[in-house]
Length: 84
Image (cartoon, rainbow, N blue to C red; front, side):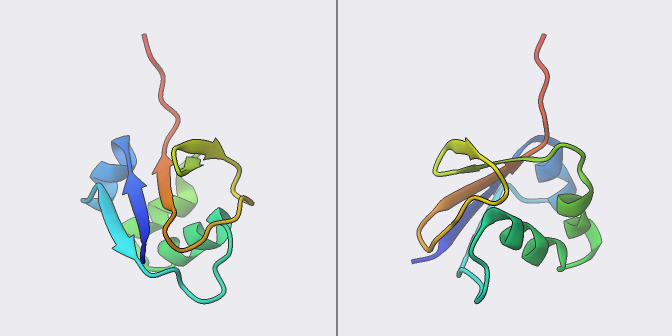
């Protein structure tokens, strides 16, 4: 079973995709590790490391970057959004 990753708002536009399935990389145990793994892809993926105030959710619950992840989880990354 893979990890499902979702990208929202301007992050989705920068990456050119809204989601992907990925096997949990060896040694990646939390959201911060996943973020670093994805950003290391380079080019537009650096947005994951440079977006200010990036937010994340695991299984539809907003969490901190030190939150653990495991195979089968859904992880979402999204920039802060304002409403009006």
